[in-house]
Length: 500
Image 1 (cartoon, rainbow, N blue to C red):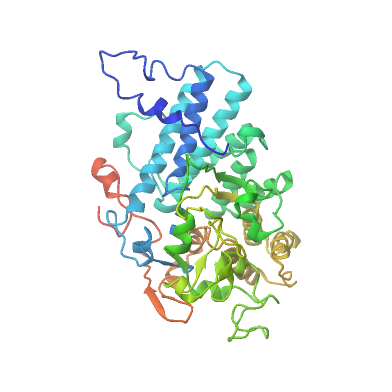
Image 2 (spheres, rainbow, N blue to C red; image 1 turned 180 degrees about the horizontal axis):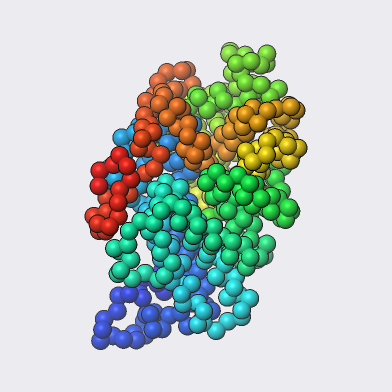
């Protein structure tokens, strides 16, 4: 499923704009003529997938946007720049509004399909699968809301006017709905697809998202069990080449559990230019310095570290993730002026190679590289963290982590670590393994360390300040409910510390 059906918008957008006198027009679909056949159901399902493209959800440059709100990257003209600097509110930061709107658009489409599909004649096998896909996507969109706003209105029926007056449900009630949808989806979805259906939600995707959700909720034993179910299914394995994992020729590889499917010219994004030339999400020195040396030790204690050659003998994931001064990228050496904001650039999310110039005719602001939402490497990290918190660093924790270390070309973790020591190593491993993927934003918030790591300066490769970040722990662990939402619905209460 490299692209989502182009029929979907004409099917859905015209359904609510009919004249009373024009009951059954012949040039468009209406509520009376749509939702009649399996073809309609598939188009409606594709419309739910289409919401993934939202630039505040899982489309375009969202991974870089979220990185720019962490100690990993500098927020240069980024939608999350205000969040990084602690100056965001309910109306001055567009991503706060658009994430809410885009998620509810997807939820509304899912609810409509789930309400209409039971009456459509088709095979029960397909019907069950389509319902499972819709529930997975609805859970994902509610996760996107819950993870930043906390409690939001839980709506599980097709859109109607009364929904615009609903109050917020509690965060626990939203979480319960997410887990309910994921359990039901996991039971009905297939493990794999073939042909044009590749890329659709699978049972593994539902379980992987369940593991992430439970981890974020600090429900350790349950999170470990959900991640273990993905591991035990043996559907996914680590792709052997960390750099290649994110390259276009390896899309849909053995590690990818769920991704957003792009296809030129219908569905494209500009990440090649946004992550490289525009450098809106430039990695900073704090992240670069956190990559260990090849001996598994920090730069502060490894005898291999040479300040005159700071990028040599480092964890290979550094060069696979970040353009550093003197390294090769796009077939030429990187110089500091190439990335003037910090001296560093972000490789993940681009189609460019290290030792090859871009092909002739390449348009920098057009890319159809898929955005990975869930991958097996994260499942291993989720399992290791949850299991360590639940029972301590048993052999299975070491095994999961050492798979990632071995793939990266790094030494195994030392035996005999305490639970606290392992916790710190896991947190470090998560930061390095997923750098550039937007996950660290959620990590520092759920670990309750954001006020420590975000009240700091962002520095360039020379150690000079490029930005100052601020984080208010009394306010900033949640986003504000958007002004556009509270103005339309006075029953929506605001999160603490924000103006209505």
